[in-house]
Image (cartoon, rainbow, N blue to C red; front, side):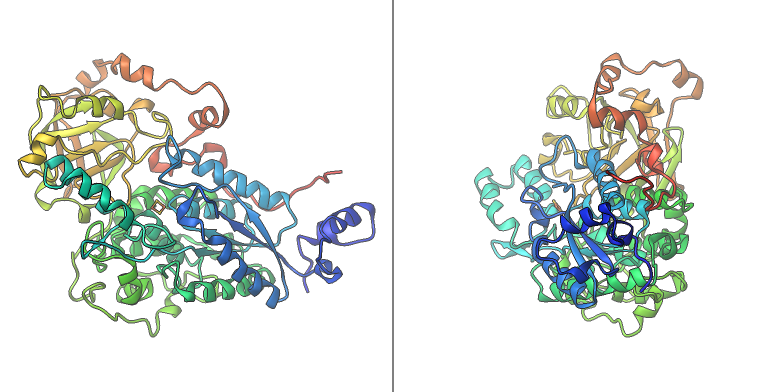
Length: 571
Ligand code: FES
């Protein structure tokens, strides 16, 4: 058996080894410290992260697998982020969760780690941590919830909240009916059942090669999730023996495979910032432009909400991610590895589509070219993104007059003001919602439309924001504008009435104001006051060090490879 990292704590007859073993001997046998691998189970179970509340049961299955393979499992509760509850936005805390997990893995006698996540930020933060500490790591995604129904129709969790609330504002649904649907929305344990951010990041983890292939999308209550969790515990022990660390497993090709998968399943725009951040932790050269270059020509094959019709339970039944990837196999890097030690491409043999209404064959795609479009122009010099699959085709080329809001509070104050000069052709602009400006880059970009336009049947308008959009949302929404207004980007200088030109086919986002005039303008004082850095704590650290969206919104001092070494004893 190779010398384990944990043996630095447990091996030997000196006082410190005695202390390390003795305090751990609460039922553990002596042979637990004979040099066998100790596997952490980084567990984001929390009652306040309802999408992950079942992960303790998953952890038990992982533990059994670890014991069976000759390892010693260690439950390690880590920072958990519930997307629906955490204020001001879970994204503000993603880097903190990643940093805390990284440091606790490094600080403890751990040889490998199984990562249990689900709700939006939990898999990204766990993968960022694992990439930084560079110990063998494997993900078990917690899985989506089962499909709930309301009055005979399936409910897409997240997506249908946006849709139903707009129908109330349009006067087509009573508030009482809306509230009645509340108890039907969440049918079971698990995360959101659309191809929102949680489902997307589970698919990204699998496409990167960091899960046992075939697990992404397995519904949380499905017994096969626990079976694969057990197998993952066994695998983690093998990975330690093989020294299969993230820096050996993950390559640029792994990330390009993830981008292909993102396009083919119509995944969330949030994957862009998360993949950039994970790659940044490994020192892998991945840029915003890669999302367009690798993803733009990929066909959209999964007919899933929010862009399509079906839900994750259907996706899993229809063959899941492996069935999708088998259709675009020629676009994948054949050498990119998985945690099994074999390339992802090897795991596609035998994968097939079982329901072509949910997963289309390559020859009959929903869209010939999907992916995330990266826009540039004088309004987004460092880039912005849009998900064309979730947009209205007729708005992908659009010229309109800007109606500018300096904050989300400003937006809600004025959007239904009868005096607001807005029509269906206007472009709604929301700024002050980037990483520094909010702070934390919240999911506010899918702005509700003015009620009086909703009543007239308008269901989409061009919207532009330096923040993010929920992965469960839809619409012609330009996101992640960089640099953000609070970082001095031109988005902070435009005014209501300026003409904005969006041209997705040409990948352009421009404002019809010349450079000299933009330079002359000052950002509005009220907006600037709103960007004042918090005085203390994590938020202060975050605002001082956060990178822009085109760099993954990680902290500048957390990028680049790190490693598992600790050089000093605790006593
Ligand atoms: Fe947790 Fe959607 S709120 S995944």
